Length: 111
Image (cartoon, rainbow, N blue to C red; front, side, top):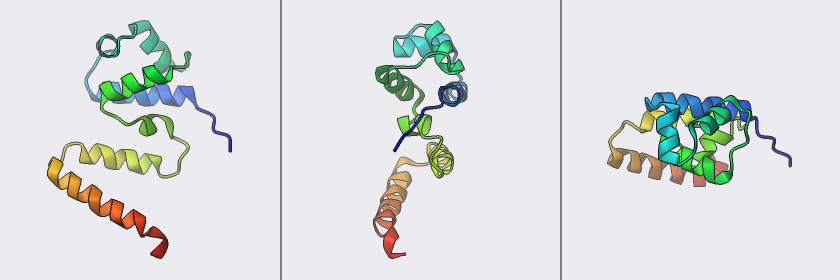
């Protein structure tokens, strides 16, 4: 199985997540210990980020790596919206919700 990363789309998702956090490229670069120019290149898709840079960016933005990378997965967009919706909810209720969904996922073949 071959998987090709669309670095332009990856950069756009990083930019959107950064803007949703009300961060500038400079602020994100400081948090991630990267240059602002490098963040700009990543967002434009003109540079390939290292795994370490992607981990730092996803952590700084509070988004999962899969939400940044897996745009070709059919359910990825739905999962991203769900993740965003849950981010503002009561953590205990989110924990219970995730537990229920996980239990359902384990039984999905029986549905």
